[in-house]
Image (cartoon, rainbow, N blue to C red):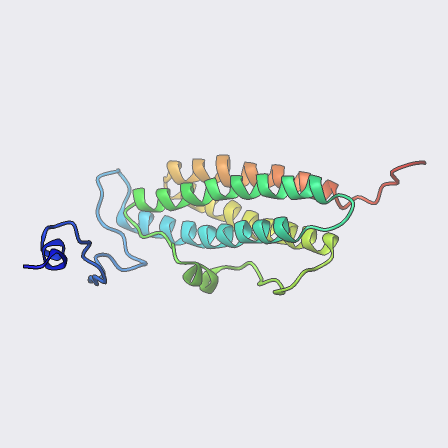
Length: 193
């Protein structure tokens, strides 16, 4: 046996190009003993996946605008948008884990998220800074409207964990980020009154 042939059979060669069958289809929940009905968990997962898709798009917008920032406030906004993007990425992970903890399947493919998001697609090129900030504010509003309604409805179904996560993470973080962004759109003189 050649040295090449021995390496292939020694167990050190990765088994590449494997394909498998889907173990759990998207839009289903498996049974978990967490004291919530299957219908409640299914509904919560549907709402969370919509918020997850919107939040993934918001994160992507933050990164895009972070890279494309221009002008006199470049440095400050470049850093702020990157900070907000990091906070949104943490929320993305938290939402996905909440879906999984309810027995669902989190939307993880960006192409799938793009199909179900309510956040409009931006132009592929660079916009003026106020337009980029306005686009971020509009995306936040989309997330916050969806999150507020979902939090209310899952609370009515007795899913306090999902309600708590949406309120404490998605809504509170979003509101703070909106405040910081909106202040950059106030037309204030810099030198004299």
